[in-house]
Length: 137
Image: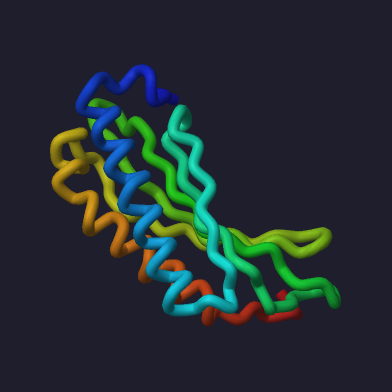
């Protein structure tokens, strides 16, 4: 798995652009839904961004779930892909809902798609906020 240091200058620009736009997107979400207390965790060396929020959902226990949406950029043969995952963790179990955002693109193509990637992420986060979990699952 490649890391930030192996991407070169164009890759570094891509990572910085994603971080900047994700930060702005989380600020928008916070304005739209302040009760969710959104935050962003970024770990650029591993090309990882995570939108966290305060969940008011329960699943199998009386405890509130820990919910977040993570985005990862990873090498896919000669190209790169971007994957999103809605994660929900209960005390003893967790769920993961995969969202393939972009598949097999060059760094240049991904850079041109940064706005679309962030918009897809925002839509997936908003969808995740309304998602209910079946306690019998």
